[in-house]
Image (cartoon, rainbow, N blue to C red; front, side, top):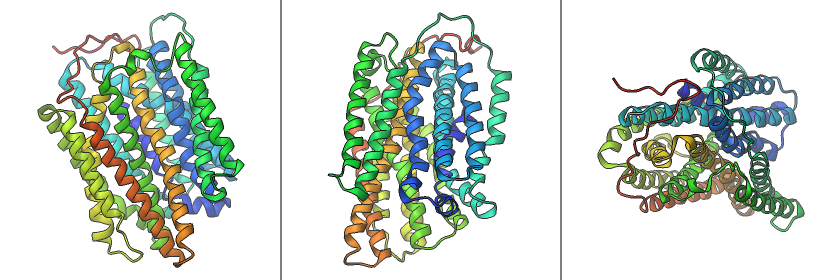
Amino acid sequence: MSCLALFMVVLDATIVTVALPDMRTGLHMSAGRQQWVVSGYLITLGGFLLLAARAGDLFGHRRVFLFGAALFTVASLIGGMASDSAVLVAARIAQGAGASALTPASLSLITVGHTDARERERALALWSMTGGIAGLAGVVLGGVLTAGLSWRWVLFVNVPPGLALFVAGLMCLLPPGLRERARLDLPGALCVTAGTGALTYGLSEASGEGWSSPRTLVPLFTAAVLIAAFVVAESSSPRPLIPLELLRPRTLRIANLVMFCLGVTLTALLFFLSLYLQQVLGYSALRTGMAMLPVTLVFIVGGITSRQLVPVVGPRPLLVAGGLIAAGGIAWVATVPTRPAYVTHVLLPNLVGGFGVSIMLLAVTISGTAGVDPGNAGAASGLLNTARQLGGAVGLAVLVNIASGVTSHASHDQGRLDALVQGYRVAFLVNGGLMLLAALAALALPTAAPAREKTPEPVDGRPAPTRP
């Protein structure tokens, strides 16, 4: 159930990518509104993850899980029926809010509900591999549904599994016992969500309006004020979204930095590849999805490999090696020409980069949740997932701005397609640099980060399982 929830959340971040050209045509969307179909979902998902995670710790993961499943499903249905771009973006924002409740609840049910280190590690391996596979499966499934039916089905497809999750949650998760009433840090959640949204909007406007335009400066200034307000709110709140003691371990801080970089890569790489294949090479949505299918298999292989290696070498070597491999693969993608050979310019470099990312996902999840008290399990998992989703939203805005600026400058001397490719190349190159940064940051981790064994508290009123 936890893996199905994560699969839906991550799938929905990428399944719309291949359908973007059809959405833009069908709803007469602008280029900026097109980006917000992706960014609106990621910003709300990332901004409310911490609130949802803390709500799970205080009020029970079952309640949060059921609320997330219901909101996600209803928003998917409304988005599929959207008659204009504003309704679609609003539905995507609501989907992100529902996904923010599903994600930390699903991870917390794993980390708190498995007392044995090996069982917990096995569950985390499956959970991490599911997330990686879902991101790529979204591209494939999005292409199939868009070509075979219409872009609306990339949203309708969430309804049956969403209903199944809700029913499964009602039947399998026991109601929590009575808990002390507590207040959530809603001002903090609103500040971080609105601040991130303003930052992303300002960055996206810079490519068309320029850095000195009020439409760029006002959102960026607003973002700075809101993020500062978030820091003040967290320092004074009796129930902060991020407990101060949670930020003290170096391992946790580094893990979140690495996850931020992974969020940029997993989102931006698929975004630009989808646009490149369709706008430059003229691929259909179905052909684009099929072109990315082999990378899904690499994520499965990488997930299995990391599961076998983590107990032997620990998370740090996998994060360093995976970051270097991913950086090399993405740098290879950055050499793509206007008229490429699919195998050497698209397939092979993405297989290399995908393998590097896939062996990092389990390692960074273990590093980011190791040694966390059960009472803060939701906050720790929420912080880790927040880093991933906000990395995707903010990173995508920055890279779109960079690519647009390069394309605009190159269009004076080159043709339209050559200028587009030049912008994509620079975006890929910057993306590869972020993975190199992730590898360097991982060097500061301890040589081994075993999780401290603790007896977890009951989850939603059900005693935690024990080994016979």
